Image 1 (cartoon, rainbow, N blue to C red):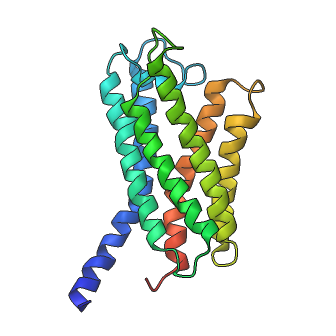
Image 2: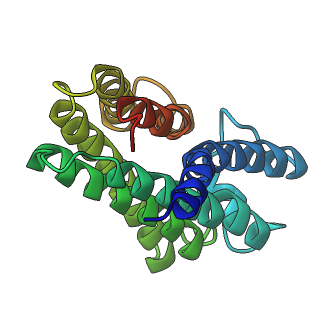
Image 3: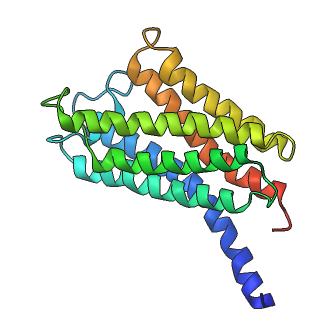
Amino acid sequence: MSPLSRSKTAAGRPLLRSAGAAAGLLFVLATLGFGAALDGYAQGVHPVALLGAGGVRHAVAFNLLGWILPGLLAAVAVLDLQRRLPPDAGWLARVGGQLLLLATLAFVAMGVLPLDIEDLDGVASQRHASAWMVWVLGFAAGALLLGVGSLRRALPLAGLTLACGGVAAVMAFGLQGVVPAPVAQRGAFAAWVLWLVAAPWLAARRTPGR
């Protein structure tokens, strides 16, 4: 690779790492902004999916800005993180990375398959719920595997990843009936956003020469 090519590649890496922060920020701003614009909507009472449900005002815009675009940006960040895994990374880290990528695609799917508030037990709503389940399972399991697989090489990244994955799992599955579902859901989303913002930079710090 020529010096000019290496320079261009190095210049582009911060943009790739910033994709995770952009994804998290866009999701948070979309949730807060569209929530404020929807009469009667309360963040602690209603699920995020309601903002993109069929028949809701500005639902299409929210699905694009709240689910689809953040999911695609998150996929860019995860792919860059996967590229930074060392050649001798074990299967735990590599499978974890694949599951984290699957989670980003499921996040996109939540915008492609919106909730149907007129039929919460119908096919459309079930598909959205399935996409959410794939997202949270992919993120929690992927974070656990990547975190364990990174313990020997990148302790800060491993610690953050394990903590965020654990919080998402507890919020999604361990607090059912203890806290309102919309609050628990937002706790899982918050863990994902924190991981997206910080993990790419911790991974880059681990491999400063790449």
